[in-house]
Amino acid sequence: MKAHAGERLTVLISRARIARRVREIGREITREFHGEPVLLVGVLKGACIFLADLSREIALDASFDFLAAGSYGHSAETSGQVRLLKDLDTSIEGRNVILVEDILDTGVTLNYLERLLRARQPKALRVAALLDKTERRTQAFEADYVGFRIPNRFVVGYGLDYAERYRNLRDVCVVEVESGRRPRKK
Ligand code: IMP
Ligand code: MG
Image 1 (spheres, helix red, strand yellow):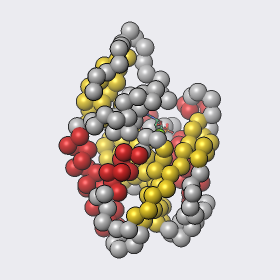
Image 2: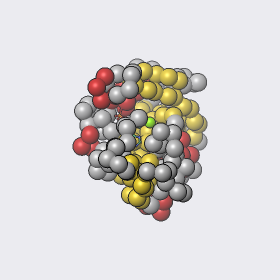
Image 3: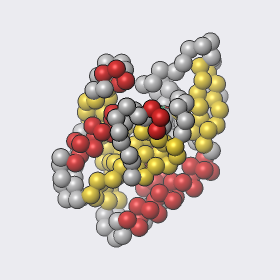
């Protein structure tokens, strides 16, 4: 795919590495829940491609549900406030829930979502994040399954966007905006 004018894309994690790692995580989940059904909860919109691929590497009965979260105002970094934009369609009480997220950055979103879901008393709650920018953390958070730890660069592709573009790139790429402007976080 061609980059937009003034933007440059560089592959950080190739589609082959992603596929291998997603397969490994799927096997781990299959092993951990041996024979029990799981509910995959995707965080819209960024996690949808990861969830689609991961689900097909899990050899268990799997259901899907989705939620959406956003930050107040324009900067999650300054407000640290998250709100729920779309709730689940189903009850998670007593179920094995795997919360699936594209990227763990400051940790604000997943801290909020984990607390929200934990209060609904699932049987088990695990968090799978494709990417983890550990050095950006402002709130402690560890995912149970992490695809790749990455440096503090703004990335797109495989579900992740920059201004709603590039979600359909097959590789995870670093996007750089020319003329000194840096991509906004959200
Ligand atoms: P957190 O609450 O700071 O951990 O933010 C997580 C959310 O920020 C993710 O779900 C993404 O929507 C967004 N985000 C953080 N870093 C990136 C990035 O490098 N590319 C695209 N979106 C990102
Ligand atoms: Mg997101």
